[in-house]
Amino acid sequence: MYIVCSDLEGVFVPEIWINVAKKTGIKELELTTRDMPDYDVLMKKRLSILDKNGLKINDIKKVIDSMEPLEGAVEFLEWLRSCVPVIIASDTFVQFAGPLMKKLGWPTLFCNSLQIHSDGSINGYTLRQKDGKRQAIIALRNLNYKTIAVGDSYNDISMLKEADTGILFRPPDNIKNEVKELTVSYSYEELKNIIQRIITS
Image 1 (cartoon, rainbow, N blue to C red):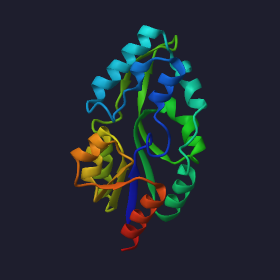
Image 2: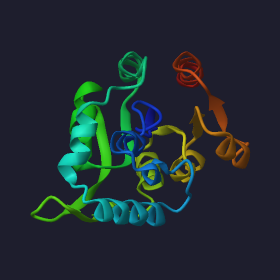
Image 3: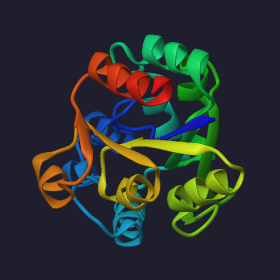
Image 4: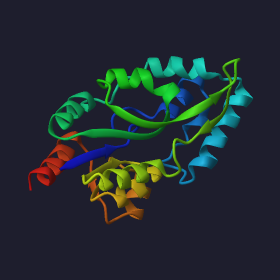
């Protein structure tokens, strides 16, 4: 029996931090896990920028509330969930995810959490589990699932390599060139065809 474990941002929804950067005009927040392999370094940089600019959780939530899934994402996810169980494994945070999960039809989400001060400032973050995306694949394999993983960023690579089949979805060239052994897809239709072939073979 197959199960799909997919990243969230860049696969089903736009990058949250890029949208925050656009809304606030803070260009430094445009950096994502497509640019920086070390997630902890990236998050500490983000938190420092938020603190320096006085941005709080509600400022980010307002941006997220205005965001919509990527074109075709809802329909693709509906199709996928009709074929196989699906888990969204993301390095986003439970405090961010609600509005986006609602727009995607409430798929199952594994993610992290933020440490928020009483005044709404974000003090830090807590990983649900170190290398949680890869650990999810290991756990699912121990439940006798065959695993398909989908992602687009550096923080997805360990998950993609651990899965029975790892698929890069619309990756930037730097990541595609670093992990040439992975299947690459650039559209939902193409991704649908790849997954369909796997689960019906």
